Amino acid sequence: MTEAPRHLAETPAIAQIALEGLRLDGAIFFRSELTDAFAFESTPLALADAVHPGADRLILFHIVAEGRCWVSTTDGDRLWASEGDVIVMPYGDRHTIGGMADADPVSILTLLDAPPWSDLPVIRHGGGGDRTDLVCGYLYSEDPLFDPAMKAFPPAFVVRVPPGPAGGWIRASVDYALAASAPSNLSGSPVVTRLPALVLTEVLRLHLASAPAMDHGWLAALRDPVLAPALALVHGAPERKWTVGDLAAGAAVSRSLLDERFRAILGRSPIRYLTEWRMHLAEDLLATSDLGVLAVARRVGYDSEEAFSRAFKRAAGLPPSHWRAARSS
Image 1 (spheres, rainbow, N blue to C red):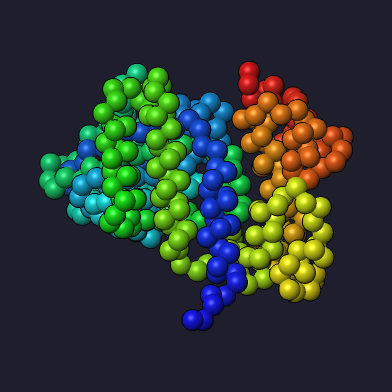
Image 2 (cartoon, rainbow, N blue to C red):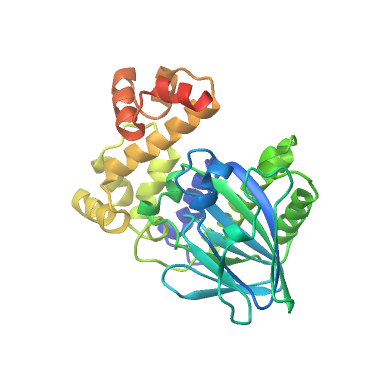
């Protein structure tokens, strides 16, 4: 049997590492009950503070529970989604959602009560024709995967959930969340609070398993024969004292070629990518563990607390201890 190319065999493992480390906050579900003709325009930043105070961007997903609709971003192209599909807006771009019949879009702010919400929000809109029901999830994350500069994902995409356990779990999770009377981010149940994040992570896993090839960004890097093995090394052992030479040797290419591919596809040098990933891991450890700053530094490849603190402050704007205190206040 022919062996799969090395970079393709490593791709799922790299993606899995990234998804397992996702930190998603401020999750909230709401329903949209729409009838043709309908169209509404959403500017997620207008709702950002209600989902996560101080957020400068949001992640959205719309599960089509019934019917059919389209979504378009600023490029004007329409992506169609049918029952069971999930529309994902990874960077919270301004977008319009509409139905089968033409309609002038209205602002989502005219369809929702002003936040904060004590009850689960519901949008009801349309002309009384064929019905489309959506379950909408809004989340917040500082993960590099959702940094628009990384271009890990297109601005909008549709995930067609295959029949089987994954689809059944997503549907059951959504039904459970919608049975609650309060918004998920105000629920006293840790299960309900986490469900939108778990649903999005599973949808992203399905997307990464079948996403088409791209020329730039993280998905392109996962499929690149030069970058994929280097990324596998970085994500698999971020604490190691990697040099460009080490990563190039692991990818069986020259240092100059590795540097060229990083800059062309990811828009940053190998060492900058390594540093950014380490800082992301450090933020996660500072936010979710009681480890001291030196212990965090060593987990992400720094022997010196001073060197780690300087690097962290350049990335996050505050020294590690101050950043942790600000997060917990």
